[in-house]
Structures are given as C-alpha cells and as structure tokens.
Amino acid sequence: MAQTTHIGKLTHSGARSFNPVSKAFHWLMAVIILVAWGIGYYGGGMLHYGVSDAETAQKIWAINLHKSIATTTLFLIVARIIWRAYHRPPELTDMPAIMKLATHLGHWSLYLLMIAVPLSGWANSSSAGYKIPVLGLFTIPQLGPKNPALTPYLVEAHFYLSWALLLVVVGHAVFALKHHFIDKDETLTSMLPKQD
Ligand code: HEM
Image (cartoon, rainbow, N blue to C red; front, side, top):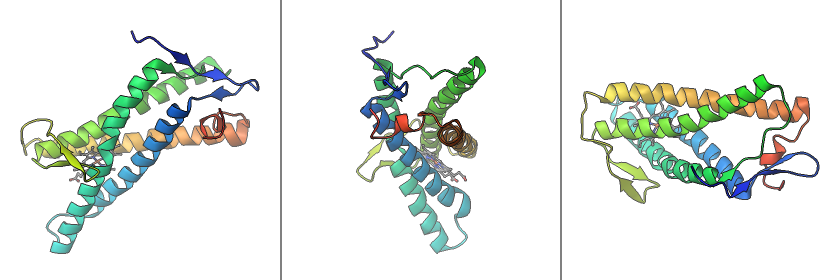
C-alpha cells in the first residue's frame, strides 16, 4: 500500500480544499478529453474513407490529430494515479450515505474509463498497424502485432467506451453545477484555481 503523505483538508469555512497539482490534473485532463472526443467524433463518425480523395485525406488528418492529442492522456492518467495515491482528496462533505456511494461510483467510473478509452484507441490503431503519434513529437510503440481482423471489434469497443466516458463526464459536470446553483455549496469552487 502506498504511504499517503498528504490528505486534502477542509478550510475554516468547511469547504473541501484540493492541492493545486490535483486541480491542474483535473482541468488539464478535462480539456484534453473533451477536445479529443470532439475531434474523434468528427474524424471517426462523420467522415468516411474512400468516399472522395478529399474526405479520405480529411479523415486521416483528423484521426492523426485525435491520436496525437489523446495519447497524452495515457501519460497523464499514470502520473495522476501515482499522485493521487500519495495525495488523498479531502473527505466528502456531509451527505446521505447513498449519495456518497453514488459519488464514489462516479469517480471510480471516471478513472476506469480514463484508462480504458485511450487503451482501446491505442489497441485499435495498433491492430490496424498504424503509427501512434504523441503531440506530433514522437510515436509510441504498437500495443501488439498488426491484426486487421481484430480492428472492427476494437474500433467498436473504443466507440462505446468513449460514449460511456462522455456520459459520465457530463453527469459529473451536471452534479457539480447542481451543487453550485441549487445546493449553493462550495463543491464546484473547491476545484477552481483560486480556492486553496
Ligand atoms: C481520452 C482519450 C480519447 C477519447 C475521449 C476518444 C474518443 C473518440 C471518439 C468519440 C471517437 C469517434 C468514435 C466514432 O464515432 O466512431 C474516436 C475514434 C477514434 N479514436 Fe479515439 N479517443 C481517445 C483516445 C484515443 C487514442 C489514445 C487513440 C490511439 C492511439 C485513439 C484512436 C482512435 C481512432 C483510430 C479512431 C477512429 C476509429 C474509426 O476508424 O472510426 N483514440 N475516439
């Protein structure tokens, strides 16, 4: 078991307080995931290979951009999990046990999907034998040998997992907004840059 060196605290007003590094991971990954999702949807879902040379070229460009941005989440999620193992977030504020359970389940689903979505993308690209670019700077090795027979299944897995991730992210944001505008507590602001 990892030794926890820091546990997030409550401020004197009773709000939860997150470490600045935890906040940076949270917002950086949120932005990258949403941008990668949009470009993946545009390239994967709206454009088709072989319809015209222009559409094929546009699709290749979009998918390469998608991979180049989204692969960064593979590095970030590893760093984030290591960071979190040593810096536990503050306890949840007072709420019914069922809400606590739902909150924990939501957060666990987010972590699992933040691993499964880029891994399934990496696997589908690897099975098709494509290069996996990271920010246009370098490439990472393929996950396994080229096996085009597997590609359609892995593309489908990536498709469903990426929709599941979007749903959980949207649900997470809706609950944060509910805390802010309806419950009028400091759940949302505790994750914003200024609050420490
Ligand atoms: C957080 C990370 C990621 C998110 C949110 C994400 C999301 C998406 C979405 C929404 C699509 C469109 C699915 C469709 O409509 O068919 C897509 C397609 C695709 N993604 Fe990702 N993805 C991520 C990571 C990756 C990674 C790391 C790779 C590869 C290294 C990758 C490779 C692909 C490929 C090749 C397609 C196109 C599949 C096709 O041929 O239609 N993705 N992604």
